Image 1 (cartoon, rainbow, N blue to C red):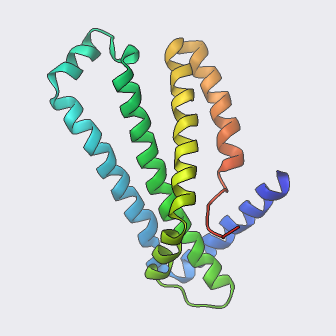
Image 2 (cartoon, rainbow, N blue to C red):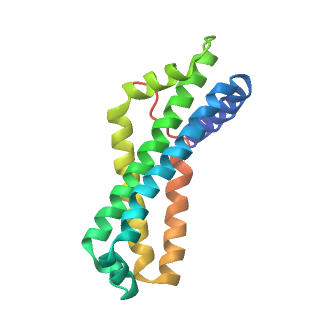
Length: 168
């Protein structure tokens, strides 16, 4: 596991070096941020326009509603999918650069597109973990927040550098 973390760290440093060389690749984090904001808006706007949702919030019933948990899971899944997709595209371009090529934005999208099933699976796992952490946190504010923070860090650290790019 530590070897994988070290490799991931090195790849991240090299990816930032590539970003300095290939400024057009900065479009990936920009597009990722825009897409994440669109995902958030697609959930928040209907929620705030819904009288039923406002009543559930006011009455403290939202945390007990299975539909709210299902929507939370879908929100997490879509956000993770967007983030991992764009990160995969960026790392694919970094790999092209490391191999002596001159990557384009289209190259990154093509590479990430070929990895859609893996990205989908990774987003599914990440959303599940995120939802479990949120459920733990919602059970008891103080203790849940501490447990969620510790488990969340334990999850985030080893998975930070896992980006589904290469086949295999």
